[in-house]
Amino acid sequence: MKILVVGSGGREHAVIKKIKENPEASEIFALPGNGGMENDAECVNIAATDIEGITDFAVKNSIDYAIVTPDDPLVLGCVDALEEKGIPCFGPRKNAAVIEGSKVFSKELMKKYGIPTAKYEVFSDMEKALAYLKTAPLPAVIKADGLALGKGVIIAFTREEAEEAVVSMMRDKKFGKSGENIVIEEFLEGPEVSVLSFTDGKTVVPMISSMDHKRACDNDEGLNTGGMGTVAPNPYYTDAIAKECMDKIFLPTITAMNAEGRTFKGCLYFGLMITKDGPKVIEYNCRFGDPETQVVLPLLESDLLNIMLSVTNETLSADKVRFSDKSACCVIAASKGYPLAYEKGKLLTIDESIKENVFVAGAVKKDGKLFTNGGRVLGVTAVESTLGKAVVSAYKMMEKVSFENKYCRSDIGKKALSKTN
Ligand code: AMP
Ligand code: GLY
Image 1: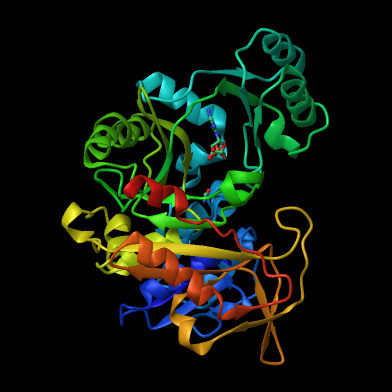
Image 2: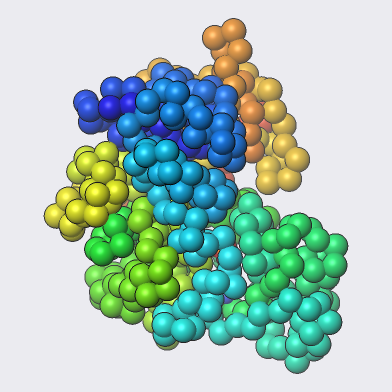
């Protein structure tokens, strides 16, 4: 089977390594992939947002199956374009990817179908937003409607910060068109849990829960990033909460999307906050999370490719998805400066002994050597019998990765461990 994977990050590397476990996956192409994946897939220099380039490549190379994982191509309709050419895909169509592509859409969906989320108001007029903020409760959470590289959410603790956020989005167009409409919502408190799920539009099967570490620095300080590390399972996600989420969030979301004529097939990511009033949705993503995937997939005991095909064929069932009872920890190594302007072009070495545990996100190969080429360079994942052991093991392996000014948080897993102990 010739398989195409759209994307270039650590998440895509984790997906590729997992589908390779199935001998049917005889040829795997990554578009564009990165230099650190070259042992696992043939990387082809076509951007993940070049929908025409991707479909042309797929047709010319008689691709049997396409896996589309990043948000931009999904929101742009990459799956629709590939399906039009007769290529079966894993990933939602454009009309379902809007669940991530528009926060206004997702908030209105939740309101209409009674799915628990933060209270909110939508604004398309800056003056009205500013007037509302004069008396709105603080802190206020201000979100750009569209995709913004994970940076379109500002938590404002003062009225000045809130006004600044609105002006930067709506007048100064910091996020371009994504900020034409904004959501201002209630600030929620509680531990966050990421739950990725497989769904074929009929059945929803949650994967093992995980916890992201979004801030750049230890103790959840510093700027928001794409994610500096993850652990799975997330100890805050108890069986009772899982059941509540299934009944009040997961199933109602699938039903709501069907009722709207926007059947979601693929991986639906629920970003949840466990508040004192129960779990609430912070965000939906129309795709696997990064770096959640790098801890979730190493714990998956079932065959990923078969699960994906069953999603595409609408034959998914819970018994197809089995997870190990072990724990995983992924630590990300970032370039100096990330998430702002960061260094590139540093010689990257990864000891042979840990290659299986490494998911490369931002590297290029030149003359047989790897060089850093991204903010997040790679993640190292350890799977062990306990979370404590996984954390120790991931940091130990990280010592075998080197590049100048390598930066890692030193407390990945600390919060989860304090809950477990
Ligand atoms: P999002 O891009 O919607 O996931 O938001 C990014 C991060 O902002 C989340 O992971 C939360 O930590 C935080 N956040 C978003 N919405 C809220 C909210 N209503 N209350 C508190 N924190 C929030
Ligand atoms: N790690 C958060 C995300 O993938 O959006």
